[in-house]
Length: 216
Image 1 (cartoon, helix red, strand yellow):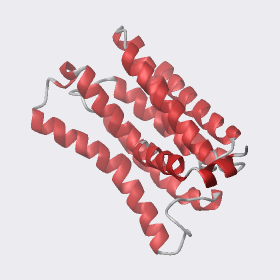
Image 2: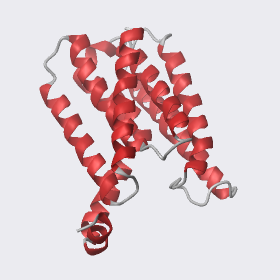
Image 3: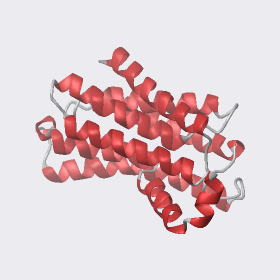
Image 4: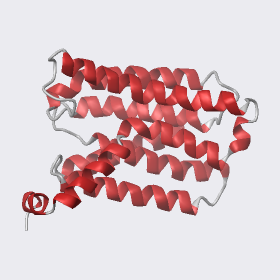
């Protein structure tokens, strides 16, 4: 039975796959990672008050999720794209460039904050690199943005364990499980081929590893 047949005969599974794709959208990954660090290593934020920490979390969401998403919305309303879902490679070019700018800005800011985890330096560098590689790959095929995001997130959690010398078995297992669910969801609703999803996962993971090697 083909994927198309499955999605047409299982509306509930299709709905669940879409919910997973929205909740674990790549634009939300930096916010989730920041929240994870707040939970696992609160002592890394000892230099700021709880209220300032909440503002810092909000600023991460604002810079890495809201502004890129709002830019996509504006492109759609101005008729530069046919939908907010960016289904074609051409529609993804400008959003890629906008997102790269904001990720570069977060990478730049992370080098100047002494009151937050140093690992954010390599994480922001990694997502900046991965998005840049994604833009290049977009010229040849529609590489999965969800794959890039989840591949990077999973590798980042593994690298956190190495950096802090902590047995982060549960967070790593959770990240890998969610990565598998997201990848399966993208394949199930027929948004991407297996190659596009797997290459996205590979690009996200390798860019985090490279950033860790060069930054840390």
